[in-house]
Amino acid sequence: MTSIEIPIRDKSFVIETGKMARQADGSTVLKYGDTFVLATAVASKTERVGIDFFPLTIDYLEKTYSAGKIPGGFFKREGRQSEKETLTSRLIDRPIRPMFPKGFKCETQGIVMVLSFGDENTSDIMGITGVSTSMMISDIPFNGPISGVRVGRLNGEFIIFPDLDESEDIDMDLIVAGTDDAVMMVEGMAGEASESDFLEAIDLAHEQIKKLNAMQRELRDKVGKPKREVVDVAIDDGIRAKVDELATPKITEAIKIADKLQREDAVSYTHL
Image 1 (cartoon, rainbow, N blue to C red):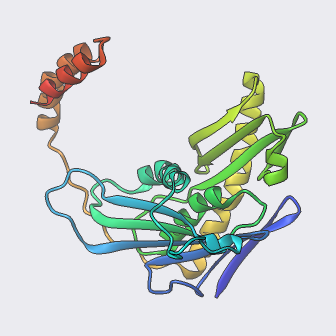
Image 2: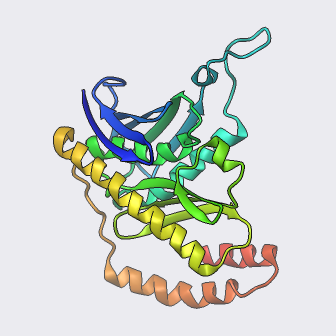
């Protein structure tokens, strides 16, 4: 088993691999306080033929045993994903999806499972970092790393990874994901906040993101697998220019239509 550890506030943030889900292309366990998250990455060896999109699936799962409970009632088996799990899956998907190279069309899955839920309020954010790390150490082509950080403002001061008690009193709650060079996603809620406060929160999150990204690179250097080769499908410049000539004026006019249904119809006719 290989692990990397850094301090965040008064706790240790740990990424380890080699102990669980070893048959996956890449798997990691992230630990922060009493919150443990398992993230796995798997991709098929052959590409799907005839598709024009990247078939990526991200699932975030919270099991009741992670909180030391079992479902009540006659049926003890857990059902389908809750609304929170679905929304968190999308939260993880958004910054992860653009990091794959063009031309990669293999079925790919990133699964995040909460093994233990403490009072750190970070399992969803750890999912972003976990999936990225699992992709990094696998043979799946991935232009990472990317990490996620939650920032809260409590009594006028910004804090990283506010816990459940602190989250009740914060007046700004931001989720930031990014690479070393750019912020890929910002989500959250806040009361009144100035532009300078908002930028300060993002800058603080980005500094922490760089540290988490460095952990991922260090783990990749220790246990990472050689990456698969991806053949990028080149588009003829003449075809690109012709499509641009024919479609750009029509799409430009279509998106100016104020009515939503009429605009959608105009755009769909442009595709024809």
